[in-house]
Length: 625
Figure 1 (tube, helix red, strand yellow):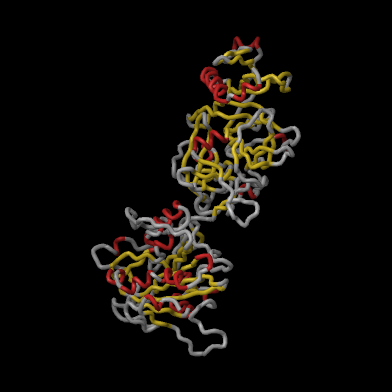
Figure 2 (cartoon, helix red, strand yellow):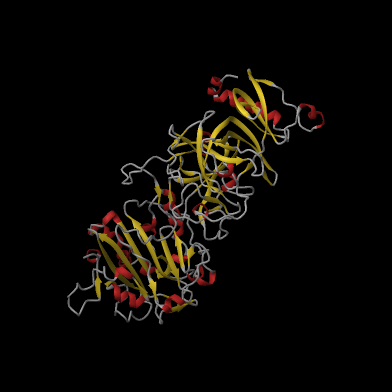
């Protein structure tokens, strides 16, 4: 067989497929592919159809063996192949190793980077290969193996965790996405997952390069990978057009196409191992003439020889085949990005309110008084302590009142989208126990409306997927509070809903970004209805940067037509007031940190002692001043 014949990849692969269909039925034959014939343990320059077997039998012992003989030559599809037989076994490479010192590769990271531990909840651990673009949606996805992100018995939509469960069994806290698409077969062992609740960055750990291009390997090509267990290891392509029979457990057996990598004698791995359990999913990258990693991905690592076997070889799916089958592409370098490296960064989506969202300023979530803190309801999942994180917003719940104490959300005016609310139902938040949230029992057959605290429209920004997820998240009852129907339909409610819009229109907001906080005001004499104390009034605090300076505006809207008035401010029913932030702290039991000093209502330094604490707003034109 001539080396130039390898250029006709489709013809060669069809021939290897015919041989695999016949010979891989033999349980002793583990793979078949094209490589250089090995004589006395050394590769020659003669190309051969190379078979790997679990046990290599000498000709004289074949008569009593259960395996079939392999002839010295095979002619398939008009191509005459010399044959070669080497003793080699392969296993998928999820982790199956003893406990080791925990490195950054095995810790929870935010942002996540390729080369670290990842897996489905029920999978031990594998490796994140790289970030990719899903063609159909344009979304950024995480790429790894089927047996890392899907696994036997898995299903689309299942949670993905980082690190993998073997490295950190706190899977409830380590979710980073969900399985989007997967494939197991000749085209590869591959899967992609969404990125949720974390940020992600492109450069592969310790290689420092992203995946920008795809290439097909040739025999003798030098390559490198960054894996969860063996870290950075170098190799040489030793076989092409390889079809390997692998058993994945629970009766799942499949033939996987790809190529083989052997050790690079010029850059040997520690202990000679270029692949160990947990390396599955690593990206094999091409090296340049100087031996440095390039941004060209050649393969997706999916198997290696068992650690107990002599020698060391790894298997990879063709990157071009994997990308075609999953309908993905490499990310393009950001245009005009101030980062001179040109790397793509995925900012955390679904990770809740971002305190560093405003340019040049930090706006943390409120700090509660001791009494308010004691009343916080605990978060079961998807948060930290009492704070629940959802897409673009976070909140804390009152256990006694069963409504949110506060909600904090980010608004990106540059990336707002229009999405329908049709078909989205109000629902309980699974992160809190049922007894800590009010549901539809309060709202049926009466004049009470379900009112959003974090305005639905404010949350619909980012990618289409993020906005869609935020749209659904906004309908959790933890973001809802009761409002009378005439309140919800009143002119004052219309003004309430325009507060954020008015800031955008009347103020030069840096980067068009807002940080907004809001919630109900709890009072002892709130009206009890169906066993629930219905709040009379609501507050909202809007923060933004203008010409680099942090500014804040606080508002209260009363619902006191139920009975009585808001005693602390003497407000009339359905009146909207701009108030001083420190007064709002007194009403809510919350400390708003830097927003107290950023208050546009507060008297300037050296100002009068008698400051106005509440300013009535009668119409749209009076919202901002």
